[in-house]
Image (cartoon, rainbow, N blue to C red):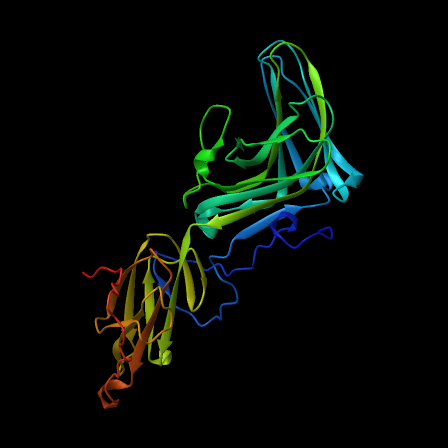
Length: 338
């Protein structure tokens, strides 16, 4: 549960919206009629302010003489209330190190179904109870395909609870002990997030007793949204190729820069009138719209695009009346035709 604090990203638990998973068959997706209730590009947030022991998995990595890590929930003394206490003991000789990777059971993100990750924001409250000035190295961590990665930048060496944060961390900011980086792309394996605490020694053994509270992490997906509205949709269908990562018609989420082909297929006895393609900078504004009468439309998802597909009842229906085009100077549609 979330403790009563200011309503910023540091104190939020998992806020992943339910989304519809749709089988894509041969990579072609036919638009449905399920209403969308969430914005696919919304950042996804994970957090913990109580630190139940069962919610966390501890993975320990050591170098040379190694060391030990003890971690558990403390019921009082946090910022406020419960917190996770971490006791690192690093052994001699010089060059020895112990690193504890604390991975949250509910903070898993799958790039293949939720989209590639553009960047990660991180925040924690930290404290040092005993030890010396160096404290414990800290920051966000993740587990992917059996390998753990850490992001440098924070130190828990303050004797009072202190808020620390990192912003806009990308895949290359996370590094494994072997020097590799995680895969934030759409082809990357599922990722479980958490934090890490580490200590090194140059000459002798020592122990640092510290804590963490109000852990939070915000993921910014690297995706764009295609909104497709069908006018007289019962007289035809629109097919998307490739299919989206996620769908909640009339909106469809794609990895940024994906090339998408939209094909309008009218039913027998019906006709396709044309597309209305809105400038991404002015979504839904009839003063900034382009028209295309080809049944096939090509878009590059370098922005959030909004299009309308218009059908009519055979040749007896009236002509397609285009929306008024005003103030289109400088409006360059970022799309390509074949």
